[in-house]
Length: 172
Image (spheres, rainbow, N blue to C red):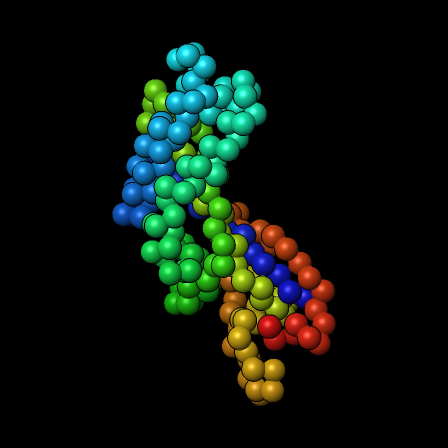
């Protein structure tokens, strides 16, 4: 069967990489700017309260996501924390969505977000212990050998989509 995996990267004030620090800073600044229209005359400060008061505040996830687009494109479609079991081959992504987890205009340190990376379709060949055994996109169906990868199952990884395998999509 074909699968798309989803990786969740949580970024907060404890970020250690330059990427995490830059995304966290830029997203917080944009949240403070974009959330002004939902403050309800200075009465609301948290994302949770803004959404409870006005459902349109849910658009902040989308609006703030634009501010980190350049950082995500700089990843060149490689998920920063996802590698094969040998730690050599990075896992690719075809889409990335940003979601605010916690946000408060009064406290920068309470700000956190998640980046959800979705992989391109891969053939799930099977499970090998606690690893997904996948055949990578772009393999030649007539080739004797197919390039595959073992991807560790970890708490921040999920199968996001499944499609039954047919002859037409067997090798993407």
